[in-house]
Length: 296
Image (cartoon, rainbow, N blue to C red):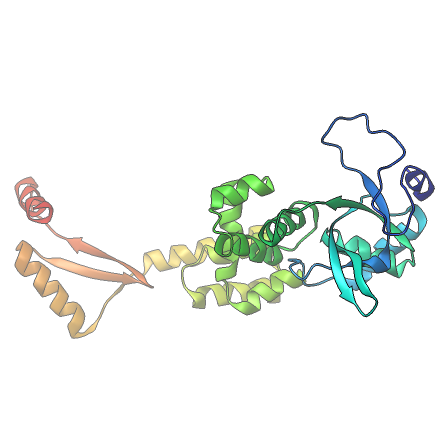
C-alpha cells in the first residue's frame, strides 16, 4: 500500500495555492492534477446528500488515515469567500466530506484535493449530487433523496439520472420508490435497522396496513430478506384468496346500472384499494353481444 509520504512527494505543498504538479502527467488529457490543501481552507458542501456520519466508522477511518494518509483525493471547487480581512480563497467539497472529517480527526494539516472547475451554480449542484452518489457510501434513503433532487430540481428523467450515475433505469426507479414508505421505515433504512432488500419486500404490499405489519415482523422476528419476501408472498396470497365484495347500496346501484346496460348478471369485487368486475355470460353469442356493447 502506498504511504502518505509517497503520495505527498508527487504533490505540491504550498498552502491553498493551485499549482501544477512538478511530475509530468503522461496518461493523457483526461488526467486531473492533485493538490495538497490545508484542511482549514476546505468547507463542506451544503448540498451534500449524506446527512449522517457514523462516528465509530469515522474514527476508524481517521486511524487508517493517520497511518497511511488520504489515499483517495477529495474533489472540491474553488470559491471566493468574504472575510473581515477581505476576499479569501476557499475550497468547497464536491465529494469526500467523510474523508475530510476523518482527516481533521487525525489532525492532518493538509489533504490531497482534485480541484474541479464548474460552469455555474446549477452545474455545481448536479455535479455534487452525482459525484456523491457515484463515489460515497450513501445509504439507500440518502441516495433516493439525491435522485429526487435531480428529478425535481433539475428535471432529469430516470434514464438520464441512470446514465449519469452509471446505474440502470430500474435501479433509479426502485430507489425512488423507497421515498413512498412511511417515515418510520425510511428512518430504519437510514439507520441500517432494515436493509434495502427488506424495503423492497415491504413495497411489494399494496396497503400501508400490510406494510406496517410486515415491517413489525421484520424487526421483532429479525427476518432475513428472504424471510421477509416469503411473508410478503403469503400476505398477497391470502388477499387474493379472500376478495371482499363492496357492500352497501352504492355497490348494488353500480351493479344494477351495469346489468341494465349489458343485460347480464355482474358482480363487483374489492381487494384492498384494487378490485375487479365480474361479468357472466351463457354462451359465445352472448359474449359477442356484450363485447359489441362495451367496444361500441
